[in-house]
Length: 239
DNA sequence: CCCTGATTCGC
DNA sequence: GCGAATCAGG
Image 1 (tube, chains in turn orange, red, yellow):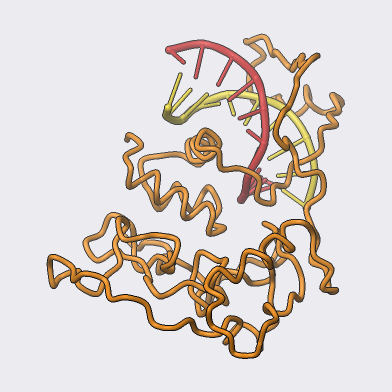
Image 2 (cartoon, rainbow, N blue to C red):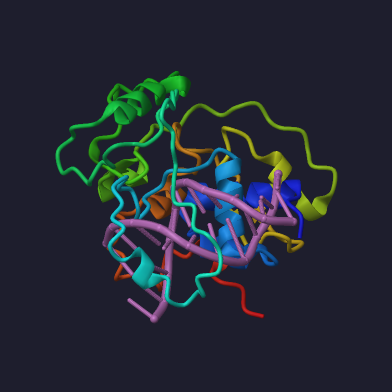
């Protein structure tokens, strides 16, 4: 399988949407989890809560853990980056743990400030949605009450030209995605009816208000996965 | 054990 | 560029 535009887009969206590499690999098909991760990194996507962050390595159990593989190949375990400049932010040192207080990091302040691009809607409510905590990816986490109407609805925009085909007249395809429409996927990528929500986004977020409520839930501990409700993409494909 | 993402390195 | 092998943590 090759990385077509569609597959890359699906990978990016699912990755940003919080799906695991395994889920993405399964969804795409024909690729392994490692391929997804490798591609994601090559695309420049990375971070996201990863179990491995520590730069510290202990060589105590390395040899022991490698019993499965016959020691037939030399193991270059060195990363001699003596003078590695490391220009950009290489590692986010500490991932912001869910903070109960509105204390927001730089990303939060940035988001809050970037919220009013469509601030023509002055309803007297000049405040941005109350920040309850900061999510794993630096997302603002809002209280349940605030999720329904965090942003005052903006005045209606200009009408967009009609779609060429009535088949997809009301569907938002991959090519229709932009910064203003909800990117929440509906259905499965690759299938004819796969499309995106297309609702007007909650400003500052890639999804509409409703799907923000689905996308930005408190990340549960690894032990308890979310089986029932919030599975995006219509859940795992049943073949 | 299982899972996760990160990294390396031969291709 | 790709991804299996490997590493490392939960």
